Image 1 (cartoon, rainbow, N blue to C red):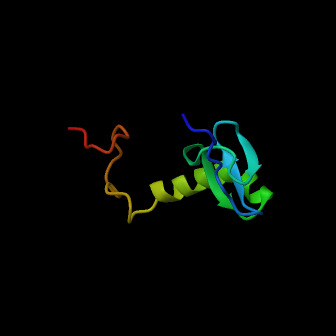
Image 2 (cartoon, rainbow, N blue to C red; image 1 turned 30 degrees about the vertical axis):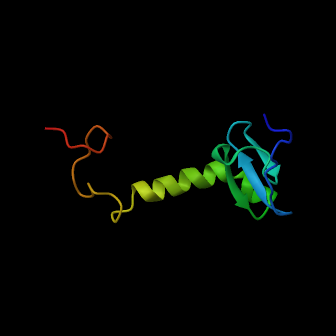
Length: 82
């Protein structure tokens, strides 16, 4: 058992959005697997979920990344249906 808990170190002014607690944090309070960031401002971090949603839509609609561009949509699993 460790005597000291290893504290995650962040730079002053770095903001994160915690996915577990659904809140903005200054500096990394939660594990990296549970957060988005770093962001330059509190405001930017507060819109993390919206930003992720917009980026996901852009990716889904980008023909360079969509192997099935121009094909009929199937069941959404990425495999063709007979």
